[in-house]
Image 1 (tube, rainbow, N blue to C red):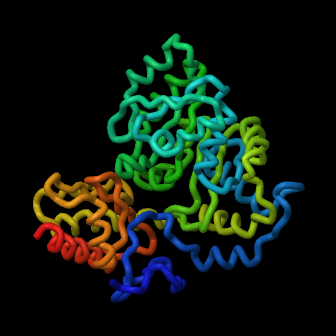
Image 2: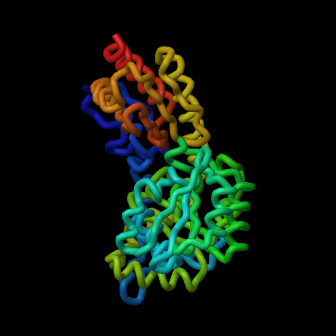
Image 3: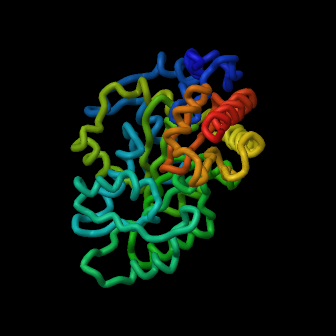
Length: 364
């Protein structure tokens, strides 16, 4: 197996060529490393104690995030998972319910937050990550013991292959919820990917929710961190709750500086990530035999669905690793591939070659 990881020791270029013998890491866009510009900002960041009188770089990041998303205020948090939990804690009372599309990340992977929040996470059916509006209307009108306090959407939608919620759908969810006196939260971890795909300003998406979480460490390439944005009163409550969860960090401006740079410089890069995903999808269709289904990516996520007769996704992941390609099993018959700024045309070719070799060994 090749012994060099593609993204170790960043060359300083926005996108590195895929060197011969390098491992192509398609597990997630979270593997992106900070840019040279981010490292420079981190070295010179003005610092303070964010748990006392505030860190100036964090405050600058929060102000920029709020302006970018069209919200009154924003809060820097260690992870988008914490941002989503704070959105629930600050807007839903105990013994109420949070309504989500049933394959949403917050429902599938984060509903353990109910242990802390004392709320019930209720999933309703949807198509391509977009919740069924009739089902939503029924839940909002229900007179059950559980009052609905929050409705959550996700865009782009990870378990729907990076699907982008149509703005008309988001506006319909917002109106139905608002008319029922229910707040809306948007899990916008990859919101900028959605904005690029729709060719709209991020505000056009964020305005469909009271609060929005944005991840800085995925395609935007910051090493860590996320922001939660919304009304000032809600953010003040979330700030107090963040402290209770142990999320207050001291001279964290040294990391927030990279997030500040990410918001200023990286969104335009995502267009290339989407193009790489499209090239990868086409290359895999040419490389793999009939029976293996390749998704057409709306953004930067490609799904490979395996036939029942083939070895499962874990076996493919191991075989691909031996061929120099890192992927994530996404269920027993599905493999997820995510493109990012370290994936160029040569990487796509190398990945397709790896898949072809893996298929020859697994499907022989």
